[in-house]
Length: 572
Image 1: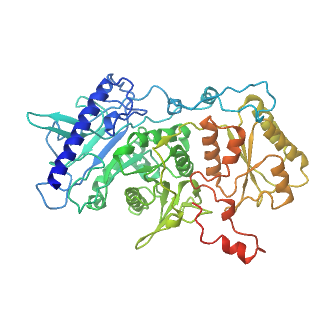
Image 2: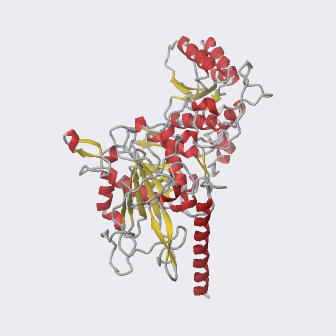
Image 3: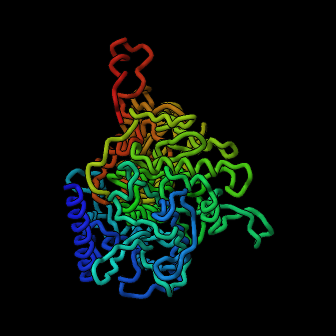
């Protein structure tokens, strides 16, 4: 009976693949029909079935696939061996069609409403002040790198008696001239994703996709620059081939994709973050986890942005990098990379996170704290999700609830945001000028103020309070954060804080500056939220980025009941 069930299950899967391929051929819109890779639709998809040739200048980056399943003809540990041409290709090339629209211009079904520019009070509850997406396009830029698109799929090969499914890189073509590299052992037993791979005591062998944008980790001596350290394309994949840790059977299978060309992390912005999000969605059903390699300068911003872009995320997305290049004899890159792959293959922490040194941190809680020590990132107001030592110690009470629906991508982010850190004795004339000009030209939609302590400003600056009130009345979101590394804004704790609250200033509570800027950019970029809805959602935990007010430490003179009532509760 068990064998009959297996045969029925295999037949059902094969029939589903045939039907899906037929639907994909008939479909002109390339919408998603089944779980088969070739029916996925996203930015940058293309290949054999796309029906048009891809220009040579729109090549995707370098992709390397590491398979180390046990060969059926050998009982020893697997290794990388060369194979014959045609289907057993050691090195092949492919080009993926790039979308003509930038990632910010992907088609969305979000409703839009055009606002009346003659209305002097955009906060009027009778008129829903929604963002005009055409206006937002004026302030967005294109991504610097080309999208990867779907990187793994199957094609059906027919013979006289049976039809077989062979795994292949999407868009694989023997006549192609791009730089995709496939590495696999001979006679590997392939599988359809989410189906048992082989006999491993019933366990599912995990597969992880590594997306590499550059950064210190990818640096190596560059001959063109007299041996100076510089990002070298292909260096990471070459090092990963030689890493014995990746050949261990317990480690996941790795597919590594390098974007072309490499850029410094300070050059990457919301358009490039949206590119990463779309590539994760394109390969979401065919990988168990994702690792993003990039520079550390803006890693906290990129990881935080992806935590908001990826709604209903049910798989781990781990960002990592290094302070010392992987090519150096002593480095932190090797351990960061290995541990990121391990956490990406685990199914216990399914959210966007950053692994660095010895801890896994929630992305929307992370900030860079050091430029020359190995512990470059920390989480000021939340414990790490996990720390490594002899064992991996996870804080299960910090885990987010499971996803409640299918993965959704929000790639639009409104970047008309300004952050100002106040200093004693500041002159508010320049701030007034920026607010007035920004409101007039609609080039400023949110103002983040880093205030003193728990959210205080000089009480003698009454005109500054009036200025902020005018900014709120003109439709600009004014958000108050603290300059302190740890702690939270408490608007009603002091009289000056109450004055700010009365002027319509929104409290950021204990969010980092990275979380504040990315969250307000995400909320404004949605285009379906009114002014008051955006203000209310700033205090709501969407991805675990903010501590609820009831979970904050009680006042010093609180009662024993007040202190005890806050212990043992789960707020995330």
